[in-house]
Length: 321
Image 1 (cartoon, rainbow, N blue to C red):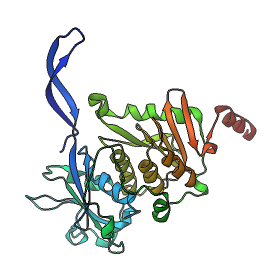
Image 2: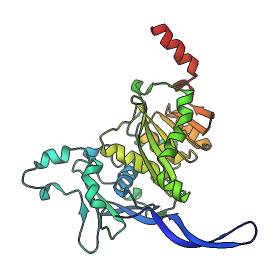
Image 3: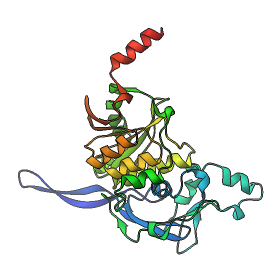
Image 4: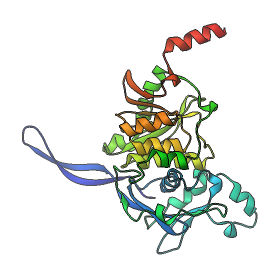
């Protein structure tokens, strides 16, 4: 199985001018080519774990798919032993009904074995027959680096035209301030690789109804971490995410808010600052956007009504009783 960590020997310099030599742990960064129906869509620099979630999440962000039903197959493309991943309907065991298999949610368990003994950094998504392939203009013959997400798609109009899941009344939940401000700490508790390397961004998905963070993913690219989370949610059949909060350890850039909007996420909580365009998109999408969420403070940039002081919730409970 591919590793998200690498060990190298380093020289550590101390303030008194001395040096010690020791092994250090680094976050792995490698290219991943994402294909759709065999055609290159993009190449991204990523941490090589949860590649299927990353590829599917990226396709969701691009507006190519919007549910597990839109995906017939996700596989690694290996040069030595052929494709490896979810089997197409024609190769299913005889005791499995093909139509039923295609209708099943694309869960992580389905892909677990496909992440072993992988020799190539290429993932191919085969679309279901009813899904049109991406236009040639959408195919990016370029490398998406670790800090840049959907470069070239800096248009709010584009997002609104291709948005999969607009928010509705089911998205009108409220959270108290203390819960919102605690989310980055909850996220950091599950950032296992960051704790060892200090070199990865994290993203997580908080479930409003259960009060739990359902999944946490890490990557050298903040946009990749978010794609891994949203791709996981799509394969679990959870979209639209109208009762969830996207939590990120990074700043709230335009592309991250765009990804959340495409998945129907009503609230995004970030550790650092948003950009002006991110705030504009959040406001036009009726999304709550919170930045500088650290300790006992935060800044609400959009959708303030979803976040209420603790005393307001206490008063509501008292009235109900």
